[in-house]
Amino acid sequence: MENIFNSEKSILQEIPEFKLNGINLFVKRDDLIHEFVSGNKWRKLKYSFLQAASKGKSGILTFGGAFSNHLVATASACHALNFKSIGFVRGNELNSDSNKTLKKCHELGMNLVFLDRDTYSQRNEYDYLNELRNEYPDYFIAPEGGANFYGIIGCQEIWNEIPHKIDHIFVSQGTTTTSCGLLLGLPEKTTLHVIPALKGFDSLSEMKKLLKNTLFEEDLIEDLMQKVVVHSACHFGGYGKYTQELLDFIEVIKLKYAIPLDHIYTGKAFFALMKEIQKPAYKNQTIVFLHTGGLQGNL
Ligand SMILES: Cc1ncc(COP(=O)(O)O)c(C=O)c1O
Image (tube, rainbow, N blue to C red; front, side, top):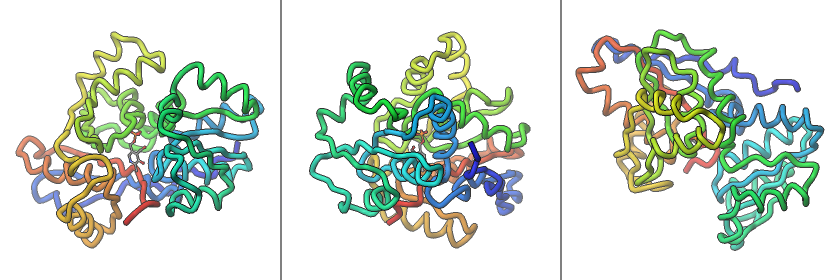
């Protein structure tokens, strides 16, 4: 399959300002990969598409909430690659005109199916997925957020584009797929810092669960977890919530470094990074922030 969402556009942008404090800071600009299939989205979807094509499927069926970056990315990738797409959306009070995200999915040819919350809650259940496989035999079924084995493997590939002599990598977290992929390829002396977008999210347990569900060995999982640091205080009230302080911060970063951030994932993660690197422990360290995109639903 032609790789139309190749990551060549994803530069490693240096932020020289911090050199004065002995910190080498870089932002891996995955947000530049594509307008809609940006950030972690193509990395998470790439192998699902390859698998779908190799199985002779003609479409992708997936799941998402009303403002899902993943739904738009899937719709956009399907549109570009000549796949059909179906999006099962959480909330039967919604329709394809309800917001910018759903309108875009519809415009891109995604067939949107609006589910009540009870039905939506079955989205990862074996029997429910089997029913869908029978009902939609031409479709490859990808989970919400692209959180499957293929997503993890796709995110691991980011290490091919990052010099291995870095001390820390920071990344925002939702389903944990991206962070699990980074963890699997993590160089020996590098620490993975995760910033959950959800309040009260148990990052380590969720990462273990995803890795376990995707067939990785338990001993290996326990070893890998030693390399993860969680910064759980930068959720700004919870998923999708924000404060004026966060919005002001996002504006400043855009003006200073020409880096656009969103208020759901990357803004919060970058805020956590800026706070963290004030600590003396980061002196003489090389740090990468992975920009996971997600700008389609911006305020
Ligand atoms: C822009 C953005 N950043 C980060 C994340 C979190 O990534 P993950 O779900 O792989 O943990 C998401 C959600 O998928 C996202 O849309």
